[in-house]
Length: 222
Image (cartoon, rainbow, N blue to C red):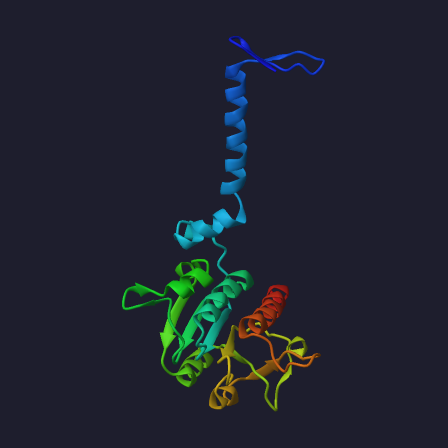
């Protein structure tokens, strides 16, 4: 290969010249192509969500479905619930008892913020000290209360058929589950049948499975 003022010549049996201007054009085109892939990727969209830069008006708002977190302690689990809520069309999340909040005293909980991919900025949330009091209030509004818990009256989640009433799904503490008094006030108690050695799965995983089932049932009933 020899360098000339008029361009580059490659001696491979076939000689051709590449004009420096053309080379620059294709270089810029290549950079633009990879930049487009980068900034339209799921990773880039996640960064946009974390910044709160997605237009809220473009988000499909579902109704009839809220999530109650009864003393879910782990911040990464709490953050994960926002991803489940967004994916399953849950309208609102109630943080009950000692469940940590995305923002407390004007300070963002960075662990929840990261785990939720910033979705706490788009999904309505509220703190309630007393889960039982919240249940009474929601029942007065016509909600059916579903507890996700292993209990004497639990049924497999896919044997439950949602009605047209609004639904509140309760998820409980990672170690102790939902408080027994709260479970007793639920209209329905569902669980995931376990076919392996372990007796339970992570609370976010379990909530995601049941939430998708409920959302699909609600949509089919609309």
